[in-house]
Length: 124
Image 1 (cartoon, rainbow, N blue to C red):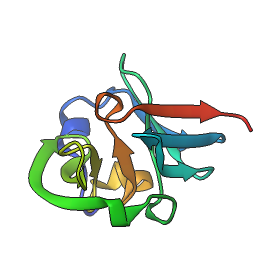
Image 2: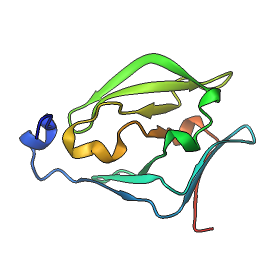
Image 3: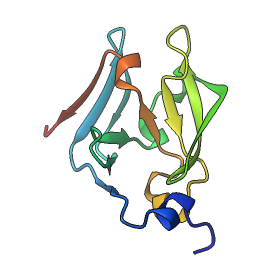
Image 4: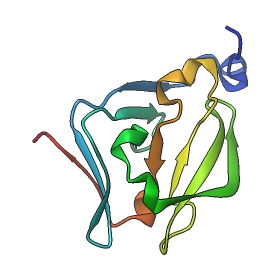
């Protein structure tokens, strides 16, 4: 691997997995649909709730503003953040250049449940 995650090198048995969500994922805020996709990727990490990463083509990117805020994860890499125009700051994040093991979420967006009204997962 050209860019392996240091977290997996230190703790090879870490449980982080991605898979196609296989269902519709919808993100709403203030009665508005910010994102809706049937191509989301579900990330499962240890004992945490699943996180859904959505393709940008399914996100209303015109409602988001790039933020200077970043965070680092030794398993995924550096996350960049987006605020909702006129709404919550740093409500969504993306791994633009994730480590090799996390390429399935490259450039996809995830939203913090506490910063939006709802993230709905459905079979319809």
